Structures are given as structure tokens and as C-alpha cells.
View 1 (cartoon, helix red, strand yellow):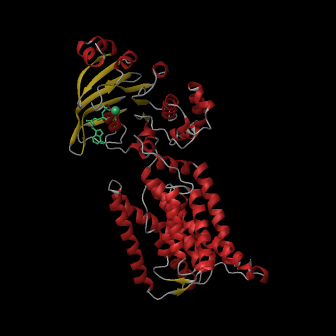
View 2 (cartoon, chains in turn yellow, brown; view 1 turned 90 degrees about the vertical axis):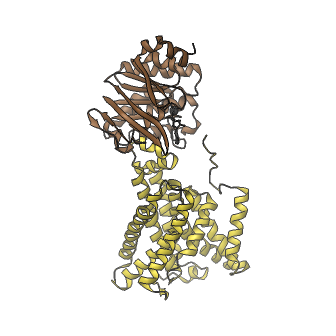
View 3 (cartoon, helix red, strand yellow; view 1 turned 45 degrees about the vertical axis):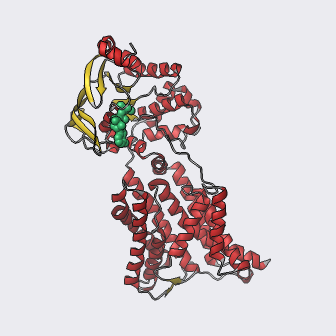
Amino acid sequence: MTFFLSCLISGISLGSVYAIIALGYTMVYGIAKMLNFAHGDVIMVGGYVCYCALNYLGLPSLVSVLLAMAACTALGILIEGLAYKPLRQAGSLAVLITAIGVSYFLQNAAQLIWGATPKTFTSVVHIELPQTLTNVGVSSEALVTVLVCVVIMVGLTLFINKSKLGKAMRACSEDKGAAQLMGINVNRTISVTFAIGSALAAVAGVLLCSSFPILQPTTGSMPGIKAFTAAVFGGIGSIPGAFLGGILLGIIESLAKGYISTDLANAIVFAVLIVVLLVRPAGLLGKYVPEKV
Amino acid sequence: MLKVNDINVYYGAIHAIKGVSFEVNDGEVVTLIGANGAGKSTTLQTISGLLHSRTGSISFQGENIAGVPAHKLVAKGLAQVPEGRRVFLQMTVEENLEMGAYTSSGNVAGRLEKVYDRFPRLKERRRQIAGTLSGGEQQMLAMGRALMSDPKLLMLDEPSMGLAPILVDQIFQIIHELHVAGTTILLVEQNAQMALSVADRGYVLETGRIVTSGTGAELLADDNVKRAYLGG
Ligand SMILES: Nc1ncnc2c1ncn2[C@@H]1O[C@H](COP(=O)(O)OP(=O)(O)O)[C@@H](O)[C@H]1O
Ligand SMILES: [Mg+2]
């Protein structure tokens, strides 16, 4: 029972990281209708910026995290403006290839700047917890990760549904031409979406590295792919879907690792995705929207 | 108010609008009629900035707006109800109306009340998702949404398309009321009979060119127009 509980807790915590990353994927997809495969690598950059701020500049944890968020926000806007914006009219295949290119570029740039040798990340949220909690696998990192994820989820939902900019984002995701006729600057809205997604990626990166302290240029790839899977699993384009997909994926992965096999865990995660998509092609909470005639 | 001068619009190699010129004066209802594919929507989209002309000029209240991106034109007083309504189907009726006032800083609540007065149906359904509205209600929403910016010039692209005759009458009644209230309107229609009867003046568009123009009554009496667009 204790073992199950500890698997579940680490699953929810891991899933929370996936969920935060998946939110970025799903928001960008919802508005720009593209899969930003470089999103995972923004996580890694966030991790490195935080690492440098902590270790080289000696800044406090919170300031380091904010700095990582600011850096990733700028990076997100830059990537969108330089790599994706010129392709607004291009086919989706061209955009996809570009996104993969950006992903490799970020990984190689990181290797050039920070080297290939992994760095040991010091947790930004470590607190000693009572024995009773640590015995069932609860760590301060896990607690904070879940808490942050819930706060982000609630905040983002309110933002999208209630704020003027959030409504403009929904309008753009439905019909860019009509949105322009309302006076909405579509390019700026896409830019803001990338900014938000990338700031969230920085948060995810810091939380991920706090739980799994190995930081290297490829740190973002696997979580990136998993979070993408989570977004599709929950229904790409849907914010609650990204949340649900992320948490479920984390739990499935953690239980598979605990009860079946560490080596097979990833295969099991993707097998579940395939089954879900066979039954529900639009994902768990995704809406099947028929093509407009 | 609006002066379109010698515009040429292309879709890649397709020359869709060939040297079109016309004008709309303050307080007028002007209609652009023509068969499917004549270039009516292309003309409207060029005025509203979604498409751009290679030549000529479009002057709105004395300012050349050719080349100005669409999102900047709303604040200048130009609103378009696009063909096929294109309301935001997953947003509520009221959110759609709010989007119409996106760039307005003025009395948005007051305008909302005015739109609800004009379209009581929309008020009943304000919390409903637009996708659940009927075609006629969606057309009213699209018109209400455009009115939320308190436009100086309202452009309507086939507002009667796909609607039952009774709803078509309602839509034209509303256009007439807006006209009486002083709104300047550029109306694109395939339903030439209705459009000409509500319009002060009209232009006939054929394969990207204006072939005839005149007052609504003149065009209704014109033999060529009768034969081609009025079924007799
Ligand atoms: N997106 C497009 N791409 C290529 N050709 C188009 C496009 N939209 C319209 N056209 C062509 O431009 C011409 C004018 O179309 P349109 O302005 O939609 O006509 P109307 O609104 O009068 O029915 C037609 O020949 C049409 O086939
Ligand atoms: Mg048309």
C-alpha cells in the first residue's frame, strides 16, 4: 500500500510537470495551429538559466526562477518571430520541419554554451519534511510541483475565459480573419501565446530539475515528447485536456515503472496513448470539430 | 465617406478584381450586386484590409487606407460582417459582442444595450454558445457584433445568404432601420431585388469589373439588370 501510494504521489508530481509543459503545447497549437517541437528544449534553457543564476550569480531561488521565466519568455517570442512567423502562409510540413530544426539548434547551442557534461541542479524548493511524509515518498519538490501546477491551471483558465486578451486568444484560435475584423492584432496575440507557453516551460524546467537534478542539453527532449503526448492524450487545443492528460500520463508512467518495468515504462505510456486515440481520436476532452464547408 | 479608385486584386495568378472604382457617400446605402464569383467578397475584403490591391487607392474619410492591416481599420470606423457570418462558434453570444468592441474604449455597456434593444433574441441568448444559434440568429449576432464598434461605415457581405424568406425580410428590415438611423452601409448581395429596393444606389459587378451603376430604382428598371439578376 505504501509502495502504491508513493508511486501514485511521484506519478502525480511528474504528471504535474508534464501538464505544465503540455499547456504550452496546447495553447500554441490552439492559436497558431502548429506543433512547436522546440517547446521541450525551452524547458532545458529555463533549467540552465536558473542554474547559472543560482550558482554563478548567487541569486536567491525565487529571483533565479523569475529570471529563467523572463529569459524563456524572450526566447519564445524570438523563436516565434524569427522561425515561425515567416512561415505563416506555408504548409504545415514546412513548419514542422522548422520546429524540429529549432529544437536541434537549441540543444546544440546549449551544448556550445554550457558543455555536454551534465550539471547537478540544486533544488529550488527543498525543505525537510517530517518522516511520516517522506516514508510514503512525499518530497517538498513533489508538493510544490503539484501546487504550482494547480495554481497555473486555475490562473490560466481564468485568464483565457475572463480577460480581454484571453478572449481575443480564443477568437484567434477559432477564426483569424474574423478576429482581425474585430480589431484584434493576430500576430501580437500569437506572440503573447508563445510568451506565456515559454514562461510556463521555464517553470516546468526548474521544477523538473529540482526533482531530477541532472541537467544537460537533452534534458528537455523526453519530457517534451511526453508532454506533447499528454496534450494529444487530453485533446490537443484543450486546456483542461492538457492538465488531465499530463497528470494521467505521469501516473501511468510511474505505476508502470513501479509495477511492470522501468525499461518498458515509456513503451507502455505510448501504447496507452495509441489505444486512447483509437477509441477517441480527438483525445479525452478534445472536441471533434468537423471541417467547415 | 468611402472612395475606391482603380483597385486590382489577385489571388496568385488569378486576376479577381480588374480596375474597380466606386464610392459611398455619407448616410447612403450602396449595394454591390453580381453573380456568384463576380468578385463582391474580394472587393469587401480589400476594403477591410484582409486582402490588398496592387494598384489604386482606397480612401476612407479622406485617408488612404490601402495597405493598412485589417485590425487597424476597425478603430477608424470600418466594420465588416463577413460572408457566412463567421461568428465565434465556441464563444457565448455576449463574448462575441464584446469582441466586436475589442478596440473601443467608449461606452461599451451602452452599445451592448443598444444592440440588445435591436436584437432582443440575442439578449435572451446572451449566455448561450454561438454555435447553438440558428442561422438567422447567427446573422443577427454577426450584425450586432459589427455594430458594437459603432462603425461609420458598415459593410455587409450577403447577409441574406441561406436564410428562410421570413428571416431575409427581417434582415432587410434591420438594414432599413440602420439606414434611417443614419448608418452608412455598403451592402453586397446576390439577392438583387431586395438589395436594390433598400439601396440608394447600386453597382453591378461582373467577373471583376463594374458594368453598370445607378440609383436603386434605375437599376431595378434596367433591362439588362432585369434579365441577368431579377429573373425576368
Ligand atoms: N481564396 C481564393 N483563392 C483563389 N481564388 C479565389 C479565392 N477567393 C475567391 N477567388 C476567386 O475570385 C473570384 C471572385 O470571388 P469572390 O470575391 O468570392 O466572388 P463573390 O463574392 O462575388 O461570389 C472568383 O473567380 C473566385 O473563384
Ligand atoms: Mg461572396
